[in-house]
Image 1: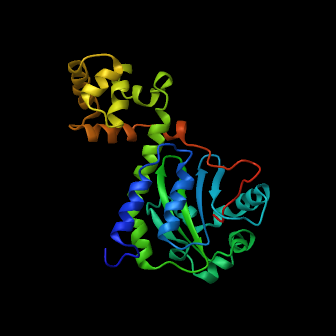
Image 2: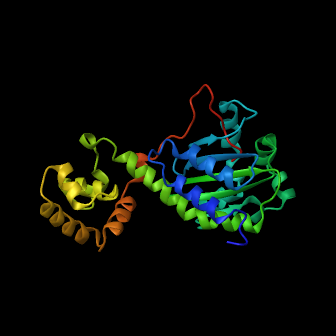
Length: 271
């Protein structure tokens, strides 16, 4: 930890708050606030691009120099010039990178993306943190007028799995909200019964067999039998592994939120 730009106690506090998010709609602003505490930035944005349609959605935590419509016009015209997006679209698997990893400052300043969009935000470099979601480019962009140190990149590389898990948790809790109206299609298509899905939902929330039995109005022994079946079907051996597998089996396309802001105060992002 000695070579990281934050103290251990501060880092633990940030992680605790990061994993407290239970609503996917709150996740973008929450994670941007967390990153603001760790890295100085001109602005931070949460960006989502649908690779099939090219549709881009975004939230930014600072003022923008365009209307949303004008930003989207410029962004759609030049987003293919973003070296990180080109890298990911071509199958690149790095989850933390900067624009300067791909282009020199002069090369980047020659692009239409920089001239039409980025320079208006006072930004010269960007650090991207990617959250893997099938069919999408989803990530947090830290934007500023200076470069990023190797220690700052190392910190974000260390935290990236925590950002992913916090996002998955927020997706999961959001998708399961409202016990009487739960939609278990993502789990049912993997062979789980409706009752097994109900049990799994409470396992994910940290409930023990006795608590689940009380919630579902049955006996702990019955829950234990459901747990045996869940372990077999999910090919796991522990409750924590079952909860982790439950997150992986979610269908992101059915629950990925539109992180855009209301039309009255919507903003774009520099990337």
